[in-house]
Image (cartoon, rainbow, N blue to C red; front, top):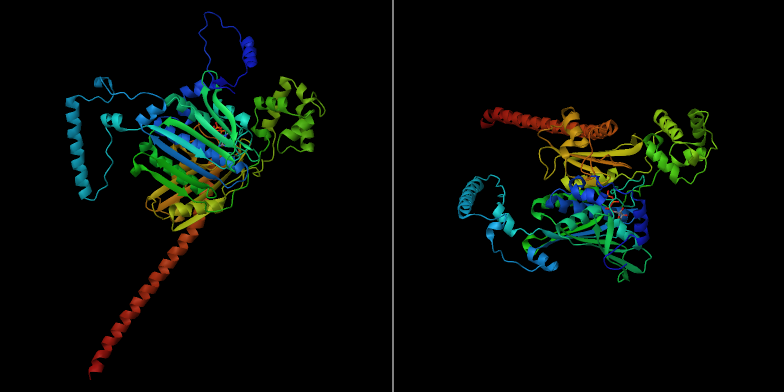
Length: 586
Ligand SMILES: Nc1ncnc2c1ncn2[C@@H]1O[C@H](COP(=O)(O)OP(=O)(O)OP(=O)(O)O)[C@@H](O)[C@H]1O
């Protein structure tokens, strides 16, 4: 495609033009494209402020990389680099001439002489207090940068690069995968980290909003003798990719996977610890992956390199695509399945498009639908009323629960490995529940509870994972937090909720994780089946721990008794010797 060309054909444009109803002159009605909507409401996708945008961009790219490698059963290798770009370098990148400030008062960080004096006095006072605290051995807080300090010094542009060894992307699909909001390959009923077809596009929208620079995608698939390269941005108004370059290049190395590069505004200082935390927790729940994380800056003392080595070659099974459960479908979905099915008659349709409907069961269901239904009736000829009847029956009838065969939990082994690596606890217990169902969707909960360890605070430390993604935000409202803090009677397991160092790890996997919002930050506490399964899993771990704790208490008591006994024997010996002394002197 030519530079600057959009991917929509002129024919397509003509067609859509003729179909659009003419807008009355006095109409105030406006439409928004999905890209415009998400650009206006980027916070609902986890892009709140520059720091959070940097965090979410890293997250989206890493999760896509893992999904891609796992989809071909490849042990993932993910390299993620954040390169700080100082303002002057950024300006030269975009061809903007350096400009010396002329009218200082115009700037947000302008300080009058009086304000400067006041600030310096305040800073001196703070430094004094901090020096005193340091002398007393108290913890010293980092001073908060003033507006004047922030405005001048802080660099806020970052080149984020993520390279994986996944399956790569078909050459022709790349523009839509990255330049059309709500397009992706993970919409089916399958356990994947991605779901909405939004994340990578949000990173691009943020780059467009903050730096105006395009995204660059390099990809190669197994068996391809070329590498695809694409540089594009997004036409927000029309929600279509705006392609700068899209070409096939000579393949220089035997590599398959993808490398995505994007330049965005961000804030490393405020989100450094969140990003590193995320990487660490990702390494915990994905111990079969190798991660190399780098932060590069012009100031070498700020540089960070962390390698999370692979700790096991055991990968969870590849999640399988499944069919809909009759209790999980609504009218719209039934209509869509009817439109898309390759089956001719109603009997075949029920049998093949849903799980847990056998032939004999389908026959009985059709009998129950009423006299105007028959096995052989053409499924595409069903009227709207008839579809409503099917839906009603699906809601009232009893169906076996879907099996959890399509799910791919982390596995108790991986979870235990992660906990031991992360917390080095004194004791740990893990539990993997069996598959259960909410609203027709299979889900499975695994948990680990640990006591003691290094770098663990006193009290309950919660680690949450959903479809093997670490969840770091909105902890308070999450089903795991609420359950661990309010519904577990820790005392009854001989664990002191306030004083012991308790680690609670809960991993939930499902073909549909009921996240609150598209930012995938927490799972609400309103689905009773999930809340109950989380509680049971934590309790099961606590029960295992209780027997270990009791054994430890018994062992301690026994030791104490032994110690007391030996003290008593020493004391007796002493008495005996004392009694001997008079005789010995004779
Ligand atoms: N590193 C990658 N390797 C292979 N394919 C990728 C990669 N990154 C993105 N894709 C493809 O691009 C599509 C769109 O990605 P995007 O991040 O926008 O959404 P998603 O991952 O499907 O869902 P979500 O918005 O929930 O993250 C993906 O469905 C996937 O097919």
